[in-house]
Length: 208
Image (cartoon, rainbow, N blue to C red; front, side, top):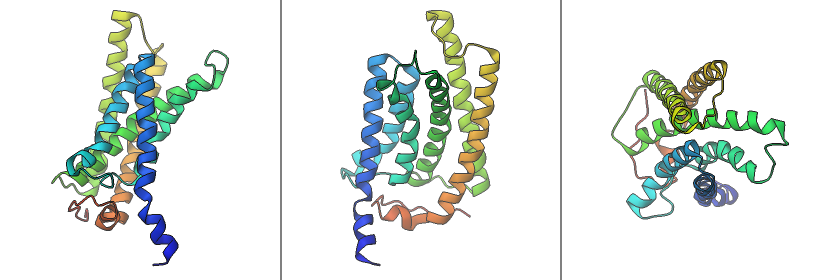
């Protein structure tokens, strides 16, 4: 292996922490702006990302950077509110809605991957895809119910019409299918060697 590749691999965990920093800023901003959805999603993502760091007390024991950078995308969309005026930028509402949908199915992907890495749970690839789809859809339904309750109790809602609700559920379902396929390919082609470089110390078996 050439020196350049070794140097890149040795600092990959730093990119993971850059993504964790984005998640942390998003959570703080969500608390300040009282955005319940982003608070829950952000804390969930941070919990998964920081669990191995706390468990092994080593900053290099962290999820691979591409996973964390991937999950940080919807949170970057959320944080764009700091730099734009939502009342003047018509695209922001649509982008934020897409970000919420992305957060749901990416959290499903991240949760499924973490179960494979951190626990003794092992699933074959077909079941892993199915589980990711089910988890993603369940999360979407959970937040849709929460939105209805929030509207009834506090008159605060993000889903205005039945069409928006149906589009959210369908988008989350399709996103879950996409994430399930990505999870399948990711575990198939990376296997233990990929996670070993991040000192996860897990015994991630090849998923057959």
